Image (cartoon, rainbow, N blue to C red; front, side, top):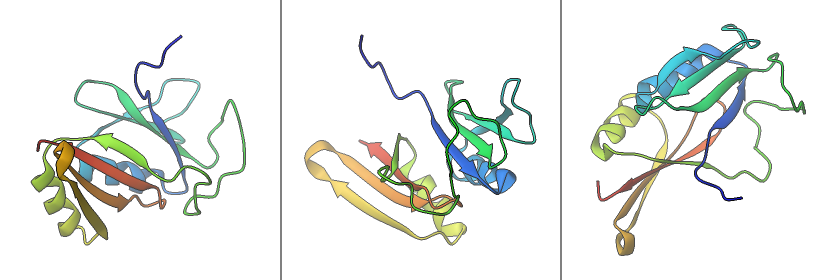
Length: 133
């Protein structure tokens, strides 16, 4: 057994449309309906340019295989952030600033990494990583 890659991140929200719009506008992800038995009103998947559904956005009333209490906007327990490997550093900075979002940057010169930290509408901290970009 081996781990090959991060498959997806699931975000529970009380604002499905706003959360999907955030990821589509800021990161250029493609919004699509999740497969049945999920419904378009309760679950949307956000696809990257490689046609992979890397973010699953579910409403608070969406059915779940492993259900537990989730409070959108609250701290996410032991999960500190979600890191995404990205390209287009200058473009994402422009998008963040044009939306008036709070953000921080970090530069790790030893490995050629620039990072941008910002939160989504549900207070999920995003770490956007730009290697050599």
